[in-house]
Image 1: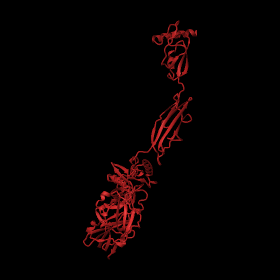
Image 2 (image 1 turned 120 degrees about the vertical axis):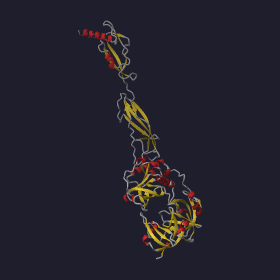
Image 3 (image 1 turned 90 degrees about the vertical axis):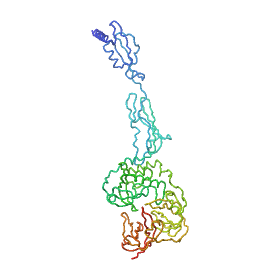
Image 4 (image 1 turned 45 degrees about the vertical axis):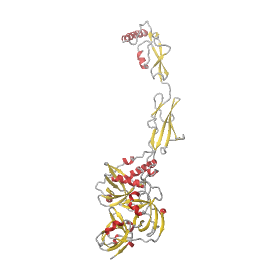
Length: 554
């Protein structure tokens, strides 16, 4: 009875399917013709045979030639064969055969070498995926791992991100007895020579209406340029004139001594500040150094954006980092300095094309040097002359009635004595406050020619001073008119008039002022004084070397 019911059901379904033209069912007394099931899934095949008096037995065969879950073939039968209703039919269905796992996301990378203050952030596993043949992720561990080798094929625990070179990272994934390996090349290279840290840093402190001298931050203007890390400014609020030593850096010397890239560093600073829309000084820590110079972060505005010149000098390899530790910009200077050093640019190894690497330089008479001074600026010269005056650590030297100033820096030079005739090699002509001078004096480059030479001192009037720059002159019976004190140190200027009412500036520098204070000079009193003449901007002044150069008349 059960069989008969099933038969009737098969027949009825058969007629229904036939009316839909799929599949074709023969009358009950005929056989069933096997259809081509290629491209059909197990679920589709099951649905296809639903209601047909056939028993379908699925067998699962591991293969990668047919998609997972799809028909492979009949077992023992072929498409088109006829089978009796009620029979069992075995059908093979594809299931994935075990195969090697896959590793995705492995690409070669080029990374900038890490430096102090800027540790590596690269993750060798980020974006790397290992999957088995069934598509399941293989977690990193015993069956998914990597090895690292350097260029000598030495195995390392990790890439050395602090060492320039090429590294081979091999990733391994294991599953079902299969192993897959993929190689990644990791190149650690020198960072680019750029100013990315300066480009990103901005001044956030307010400075509008404030004074650098009074408030520690404020807008200023340049009065004169000195070298790569020293500039002279005027405070736009207080009106004070002062010298600033740049915080956090040390640029090659271009004043008392002369070093490769010194003049280039000075020119770079001059270019940036000369073209600035604004200049802002920002103090931090000690306000001055041991030489009475103010210390500051030097910001300039270009295209409406603030840029820190101190940091830019470091990134352009015109200055070393120095004294930035413990400041608000320590990280930026530490990283920028270390990265720039790796480039081996400029101060870190390049030859300065404009630097005179010779020891002695060109021998030249003082008069010829003065007359052709621009030709020799930045190069080295050798001169011979008699020392006519000494102001602090610096000297004035004359030859055949022409004289020039030699800047001695901050170190005493007891070997340089007034009346000595000397030959000095390797001096560097430069211009400071519009005045011609020589720098880069070194004891080992000096040769003593003779001693006890007579120094000629010429008495002149105030209106003649411009013709005696670099020489020692005498002024008789001057009347003191006023005294102008320096706002930043003990230096001061005495303004006096001669008998023809010519005004004369007598300059007492910070060194001389330490033993010749300004209260010695009283307006209305009279003095005679001798000393060397210098140019200061467009004017001229006499330098007062000491008490022995002055005769107080009353």
